Image (tube, rainbow, N blue to C red; front, side):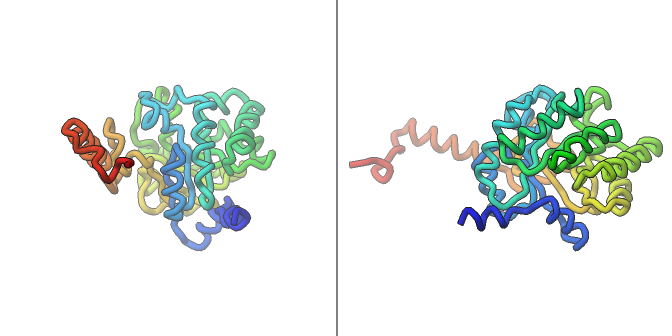
Length: 272
């Protein structure tokens, strides 16, 4: 059974083939065993262990405090559950920016220690050499352009990128450079729909959008956002498919009331 499971896992080649076939790619984040199991049972194509865990799981204001140890810890949990989805791990701040050699060493840890199948890193042409270095060791790389949260202090906040002609042109050029460097796919975050469409049609590798319109080859959302768990901030591009924050509160309040009144545990939930 385990051999069958292993052979059924989606690969980066499968993801690239989906673009050729015109089949939309689905990606969601996960940070723990339970959610990863659910996503995998639903046949999600890609599970991203995002450094967004810094905000939605660990309570930081940005993704910048997230460490390699944080990412490895959560990637291990996700990979224990998922048998079919391609698992991509985010490379956190300063895990790849210092040097291509350091980036390769850190990227390798995700595959060797945490059983991820690929890594994702933010940035354009300035990381082309780094992307090549990682890929040369047999580690697939998902690139990420547009709003890059690790550069939040440099770009001046969480806002749409590529609205002006010069910045749009740079994103287009960076996308082609990253494709040439060997990235197997490209996340486009918070850029105008028309720009995302142009990039998608100009590349042979798939694009995965988040706040980048419907014409990307696939879509990604943060699981805590789309399930309505994380209430601190909801970006415009997020569609809430459930309101689990409300449902969890209802359940907890009912539990509290039943314990206070002696209605739980009842005979059905007690041992004789």
